[in-house]
Image (cartoon, rainbow, N blue to C red):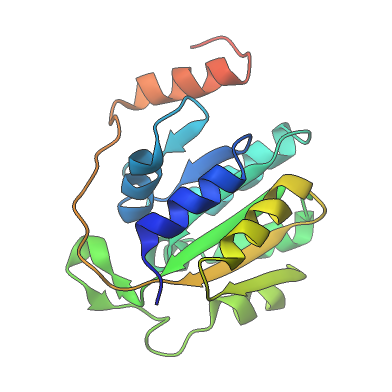
Length: 190
């Protein structure tokens, strides 16, 4: 099992131009800990929405790499988005699931992935053809190269340790985050 903070830091360093959408909780903490920037859109209170928001962003910004970083619990809550992503096939969308087999934000209950659900097989069944199981820190660099290449929709599962890592809290003001992110896309705030 890999250290999630090390994985996220390395992935973001390998794909510095990507627009990043985080799932809530640990994924947001890890992206923020790796370095806050206007191209990061942290979700708060939107359990299950990261992949769907990433899809909309990828369709609206086809010349940009869009990287969704989320956890297994959050992705399980939004599992239906994978079917829509499979139908749309945006070549610039990458979904990376940090899978510790637990619902970390609600008390470390076992998630469905710990109980047998294989998210890679689910993604494939939804029509996402490029699926990766990342098992080493060194392979994160390759994953970053795939994000940058924008050569097809990508789903990756990274097995991470179920460690209790100190929270690094990004801004939680939704209007601020929205307007900051819109600014990086050269869109007016509203």
